[in-house]
Length: 491
Image (cartoon, rainbow, N blue to C red; front, side):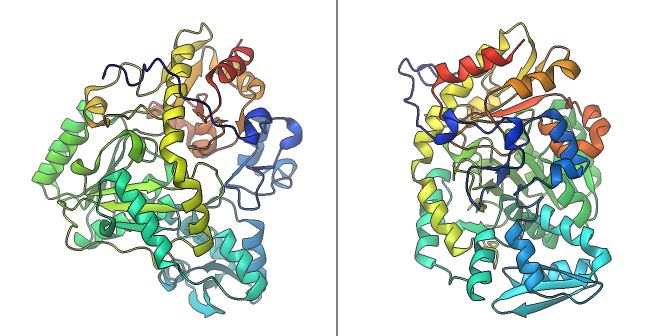
């Protein structure tokens, strides 16, 4: 641990936000967008019963949902676009910003891609809507709610803004260390991962991929649903690294995917060792650094692709979807850079993101410091069985890749004692906004495993992820305020 950085005597000054004093966490907030925006990417599920009801599609819950995470939940404006596209009886339709995404969706659903008034639509048999929804969710090539708003009003989409795209690429370059020319922009973080997946599988067609460590759910779904099979190493530890070495001796692999740190257990794989092992076998490595962030860690030298959800900490507001893919100039794809998704980031979303991202470094300093203090508080609290956070006994690998002024991130998970009984109570008592996402100026809490793996809880448990843990994404609240809220909520 570098002296004086995470333990700096002057605690960063908190940034204020309306959701600090008035979090959305009470029963009457069920279905309310977080934040209060037509284009919010999160939604309030205030009680444990609401979380279960959402997953079970109970009308009591679903009928009150004014919005949801845009890859999982069709925004009301998206529904209006689908209606306006007038599918014939027995047919359904999804809108896309680019021909490639519409064509892919159509191919998966026995449908047809058609251009209509400046957007692309995939028409398909109504019975194939679940397949289309899976592509929308996992591949992340979604149609923006701002694009839907514009198209409904004018039957036109805003023209791309190359100058603003360059501004954002330059900013991401200064934070990531990748040349601006090696950074492509995408409509979501999953779209960036999907682009890397398509690149590595095109390089080695018909070959399997590897997922190293327990990941965010949709990454594993991409590898398993759209590829030729995936070998999953759920622990991502030294034993799994040894098993991976044996696999690579026996089989040609298209690509290796991991997170740094992982979600939700915040584990840090030995990325340098992974990269060295993969490089010996010509296997490209893709890392999702969304939780680690460009501010805290430098993973680029040890990977071929860095995929980042700009929706999260880079934006900080929770009102825009976007992603980026950075390519290592010394890696396998240095001379064949995957381009920006044809749909890219919609122009109005890009303008919001550019504005939101200006104070990213200042926000991360605050969130890093507060998350570390909260982790220490929880670690010593008698009601808590376990806390997961990279700053607790930091691994040598994390310290090796941590930037000089970087910390350990804004995300932590914790498990109470007698969690089956206590987790729902703590969740409902905790006065923070109750919604899924992370990286926002306002803190968010969610029963992550219930929301991400509700229909595979036994499998998640077998992989070492407890269904009753709570994940906290720390915002920019004052530490004294946050500590009081947790002290009040814990038994």
